[in-house]
Image (cartoon, rainbow, N blue to C red; front, side, top):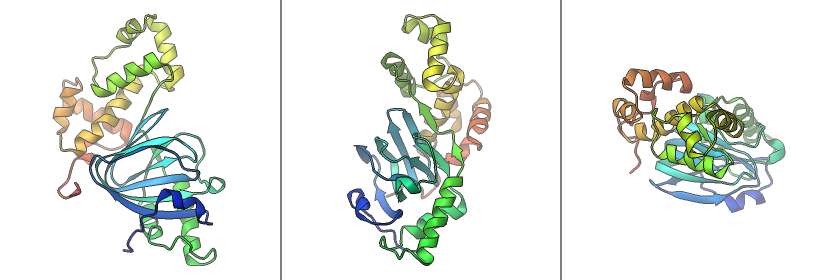
Length: 264
C-alpha cells in the first residue's frame, strides 16, 4: 500500500488537476472549525468516527464510510474517535454528485481501494496515462456510491432548532409532538406542518433517524445495544435493533467497537 500524502487544504486550489487526493490522521477530539473549500470533497474515514455539521444539520460518519461535502459548503468536522482519512478534492465542474447538501456514502471495496491508491499518487500526475484514468474511475465510483441515512436535519426556525438540539443531547421515545407544540405556543397541527416543512421529515421519522445517528458514536465507543436502547426509551432492545436495521440497512452491531479500532 502506498503511503498517503498529507496535503494542506490551502494548497489544493493551486494544483491544475480536476481531482487531487490526500490523506491525514487526527487524534480523538480534534475539531476542524468552520471552513469551506472551493472544491468539493469526499472525506473517507478509514478508521475512527467523524461528525460533520453544517447549518442544515449534522452527519455522523462511521469508519469505512465517507461524507460528500459540496463545493463551497461551510462545515466543521469533529473527530469523535481517532480518525485516519483519505480525501478527494474535486473541481466543481468535474463533480460527480449533485445537490448542495452533505451526504454520508457507503464505500464499496473498489472505491476504498481507489481512494487509498489515489492518496499515494503525486498530485501533479500526468494528465494522460494510468494515474489520470484511475482518477476518472474514482469520480465514477463516487458518483454511484449509495447515500445512507446518517443525517439529522435541523430546521431554520431558531426556537424549533433549539428543541431539536436539546433532543440530540438526550434522545428518546418520550418526546411527543404535543409537548414540542406547547413549548412553541402553537397547535399540534401547526407544529406538525412546520416541522415537516423545515426538516423535510415527519416528527416520528425525524426522531427515529436522530436515534439511529446518535447511537453510532456510542456503539463505536463500546456501549452495548441494550444500554443504548434502554436510554432511548425502548422497553425491548430487539425493537431498537429492528428500527435501526430498517433505517440504516444493517444491525447496530455493525458499529460496535472492535479490538484495535481505536487509534493510539
